[in-house]
Length: 310
Image (cartoon, rainbow, N blue to C red; front, side, top):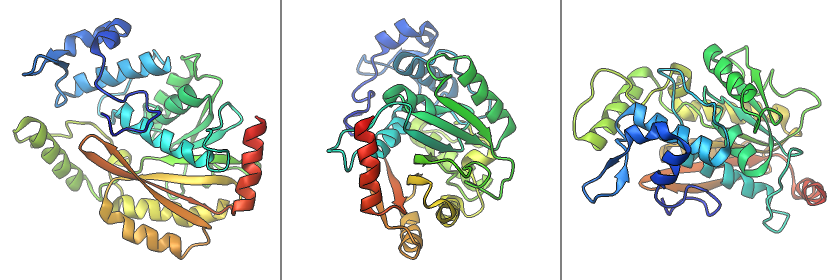
């Protein structure tokens, strides 16, 4: 995947020999494509899970990682791209040098059962994370991952969002300051829309119809939200204004290009000082990173001075 961010550790083809050596269980999923190259069956949820588990262990030193049945298995290379492009925002006034270490505090909204953004951000930059989650089982699993992996146990705190009507409220406290927030929002409008998208994805990979289930995993709050990602991110934008002085950059993935017009209009009408749309590409998949800040250049330069000292 040559289109990934230049700092993404997953650029290029998967080194299955090294991955299997690090995680022998993956060997059962490896097969040869028609060209004789090693790969996996990307239509098989178990194989996809084993590949991402191997990537998490090999690249980020998180060996005890698992996803409960039915929950979304994050694609590690794509999530890493979000982290690295978001990291570039912190380097804007430091000559492009990304600040590292645990004094950088990042908030992950909806960390999921795999706690993947904190794993990648802590592993890549040594950042500290607060990982927010509303689903009880996903919360429990993320806590277990953090507690049982020494590489992240001192850098990540998992926090429960107890009220589904809020995103940042209850999570950002009065004395908190977050250099970044990250989020992979639910992007479908309904369960039926999620099922239709799943069937299309299955058909493209296998050439067959899949009518029975969400083959690629995902629970309700992971995959769909009334109004889809446009409504969810719109709510983030409105609520973020209440925490304008407590966050350097708010960011969110935007899967659908069609969502941008409405979101741009909302940001243009908000008190955000500036916003950016950053294009990302993972092979054939195109996505965007939407970022906005309420801090003017002077305040961001002051932050940059802090980063340099650290």
